[in-house]
Image 1 (cartoon, rainbow, N blue to C red):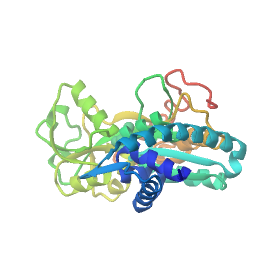
Image 2: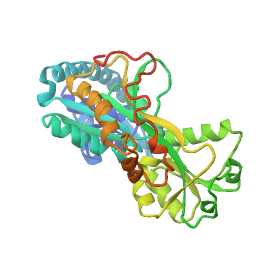
Image 3: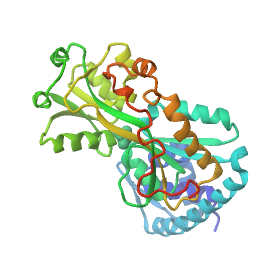
Image 4: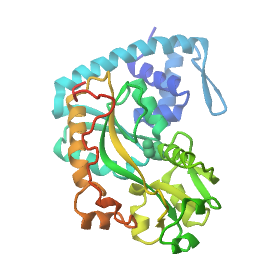
Length: 339
Ligand code: PGA
């Protein structure tokens, strides 16, 4: 039997995701490269491993056997990687970070700062929504995630590093922009553009209105913050987004925030890892870097009202709040960074 570790690893990702494109994204490879490796594995073994029906991928009987074996190998490779990362330390270590699509508005700035400090560390960045991040943490195929508050399952260590205000955005000519203060009830007649299921922004929004006994009229569902902002600009409805995603449009006056009662919904960004994860030196250094630098360096995280307001237009001074509410705060009885 002839097969390579690379083929097995790639097959494992395809089988887990039941998707070539999601496997490619996880492995930071192109989709054709993933398909080629799987095809070669099938040729090497002389058996079909996958069946593709429409966009969905299913395992054949042989595929299930190979998948079972690949999980054991993946586990051993992960342990080997951790051991090697520890030996390589910060000189040549690997770091696998996954961030919420909303965090991606500031994650590159953090990664750039970290890279300048540790140029030898090779970073793989995955961008997905909250649901995707929880799956990565569960599968133990990333080192750390930057995301909204994770569920309190006890399996995750989550440390808050930056406030994440959710605001209502509108076109500048929307009638509600006239009001200095918009009662929540006034939103009943409005149409809202929604992020996709699995988005943390969406679940926070649904929770908020649920707690206030309101069901909103919802318009289109869109799976990026960019699409929501464009939709709001185009007059499709109102949107609720993290302030971190809308800085540019607010500054340029293409969008405004509405002063709605109860808003902004104040959330936090967290740096999260699996409780059972033995963080490599590079991962520990990144976690420390985020907790230390993000509150200093990112919009909304500093203590200077002048700069904060400049960075975050249309927030009515909410950025004057203490920048590090929860900075370094640990949830779920989180443990020392080394775990
Ligand atoms: P998301 O952001 O909406 O891009 O999933 C994560 C979160 O707010 O928890």
